[in-house]
Amino acid sequence: MPVSASPTRKLAAIGAVIALVVAVIAIGVAVGKSVEGDPGTGRTGSPEAAASAGSEEDPAQQKMFDDLAKQTSRREDGDPLAVGKKDAPVVLVEYADYQCSFCGRFTRETQPDLIKKFVDKGTLRIEFRNFTVFGADSERAARASWAAGQQGKFWQLHDALYAKTRKGKALAEDKLVELARTSGVDDIEKFRTDMKSADAEKALKKDQAEGYQLGVQSTPSFLINGRPVAGAQPAEVFAQGIKDAAARAAGNGPAAKGAKE
Image 1 (cartoon, rainbow, N blue to C red):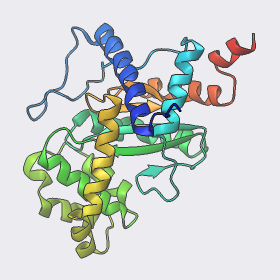
Image 2: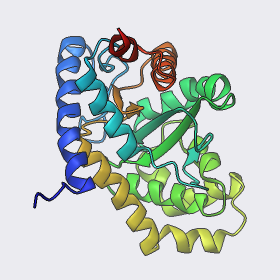
Image 3: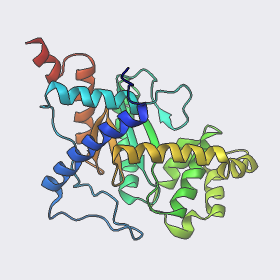
Image 4: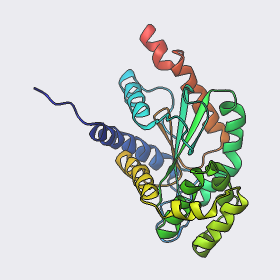
């Protein structure tokens, strides 16, 4: 009897195709463009990094994106690392590192606009994934954000971490504790304990594994209902992607129209 592939294997297989799509587009768009420097890895995407292909994919490609969305959009009740309705028609998944300045640019310049235009109106849900690529300092910051989330203050600390570029000693434990305090985290001892807990490690490993299975190469990287967007693109790129995804979810996208004809 044939045995169906596990969700992890399916995610890895689809992710390999997605990674190829992103890589091909990135080469076409980003050749000759500058890429941001980082603490030694060169793995942070520039704003010029490519967005995903447009809305002309055939039905088979659309199904691939739909399958990917089902496997990566967690839609968990009470997820402290998510904002927006659980049943929103569009889910944007972000893979980011707290030392990534382009991730900070997205948080400061683009995300507030998306929340106002789409999250607040019930169209969009944003789910954050801690995808650390810059070493121990990034992991410590990720643990801190997760710990803040256990007290309902993930987004407050998340925004504070990205309010300006923070690297190295700026992400030392005492600095993170003070930042958590000013972000509204009340129980600092619990915060310290949660930050160093096995549960925090498990959560980070889950996010990291998901990103690697998808072939995420740089931060920030995004999925909009399964369609990849790489780099801190202008707000209008995300807005159009969300509108297109909402139309597809309602059965009014290009793929749906083609199927009806």
